[in-house]
Amino acid sequence: GGVRYEAESASLSAGGTVDSNHAGFSGTGFANGANAVGSYVEWQVTGPASALTFGYANGTSAARPVDVAIDGAVVATGVAFPPTGAWTAWSTVPKPLSLTAGPHTVRLTATTADGPANLDYLDVSP
Ligand code: GCU
Image (cartoon, rainbow, N blue to C red; front, side):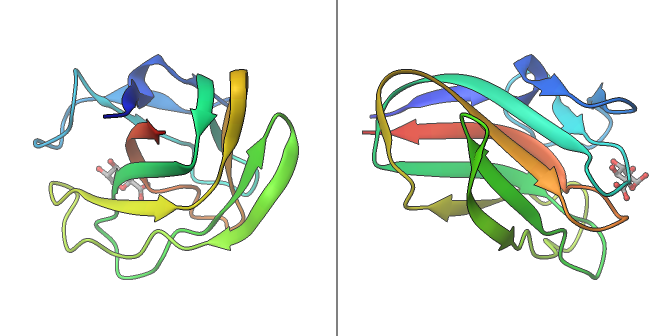
């Protein structure tokens, strides 16, 4: 099994909040990033890993794309977080991204003015 890093323990860029008003999330809440280009959520995690899975909800009708950076280097661009049907409908975006052993940062940065989806957790899988 992997390790879950809750988004309520992540670092948020200015304007981001930890909310709990849409039921069904893991842990005690979720990260509601600011609705802006460049809005980010960053986790501090420990490798090794071969897959990263992001839990999220997107109650709008448009995807909320992000760039994924590991230790400050972008490793995936325009990763879509598609609509989930409601802010209370939670889904996952799995990515086959690897981490070496030891500490790393994983940052999702919104590339549209809508900001990121509501982010629930990052699962780090060996
Ligand atoms: C609504 C919703 C928020 C969400 C926001 C958004 O306000 O309640 O949880 O973050 O839309 O569009 O990002």
